[in-house]
Picture 1 (cartoon, rainbow, N blue to C red):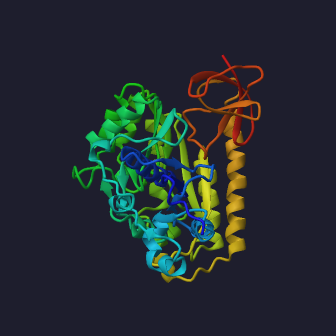
Picture 2 (cartoon, rainbow, N blue to C red):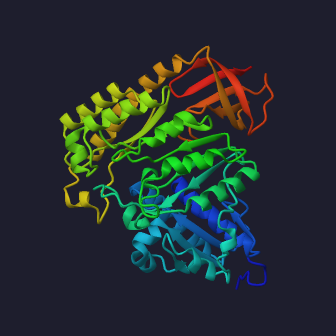
Picture 3 (tube, rainbow, N blue to C red):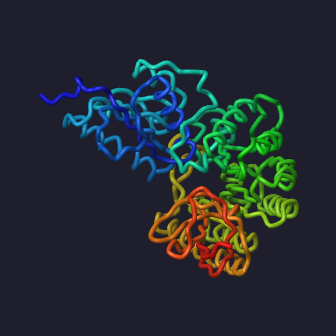
Length: 436
């Protein structure tokens, strides 16, 4: 009988889903290493005998990917290729009982806030002295900083509160300490994330305190860019814009998921706002921070979305001219308010609508990019691939936004450096330039 019990344990953490999940995996990695446990993140060596899968449960595609990954390692365990399989994260939080019944090969399932219990499986203690210290798995020059967990919003379509619980802000001192630690390790860009970043502070400081937090983070030596993600539009704290305009190292960039452009749909989605209020907010943002790049996310095919609603969303997009935009097809999630409605927009219609939105956005993006030709931008070099250096301007977040492409045969650059780049040409989603 094949066994690995004589070998020293080696753990591999596999992360699925969003950047917030990635931070959770990094915290687990840091805690295990702090307990002198041999651990890697997404190793391709296949030499780990214990696997931890950190799952996503956001929408159907993400859930299927998580289930497929668990099953892949469950089969590996059956074949004696691994000894232990643990599952954590959003899918595990939401469907623990079902998963235990369906995939008995998994040794234990853990929810999103059960890190100490997971550590006990490794006979490891949760080390409070490691709070604020985190081993990052991203490129060494940027890191995600999760400022809060959970969400108190009542959005009809969203299952995140079911998986992540109520909003809990992290203390400001702890976040500043973590930022200093990251900067000491070479991080130059902080990407601020939370389920709802603009709610920050209401629970522990009894007021929205994101502006003060950003101001303190901007004081951290070595941090050259701070980028704000996942700002909720309703009750948006306008003092954030004042800090953004005042501090040079806070990027003129805002990720603000708006979900729709029709007041009727925003009401069905329980977003607490209207198209008119949203347009006024966008106007205020652009007025207070001239030149800001606004990224938004929309949903195609929510229950009850008529052709008229969709046309109104298209009109909203054309009028708002977002610098960055993404769109999801609606996913019918159990135990959400939207699940009480019939999922009445056919999948092919959802996809057609999403495609139409992205065609319009590609046209807007190309027009905006063409205006950048001949101008010079500060660019952070992320990586080298296919004979090019790939970088980003302050208006672009990793993986989801535009990239700046520089010929590596003609120019030598260092990954993690800031370089002034003159833009020579542009397409819908990429800029091509020459270092100055």
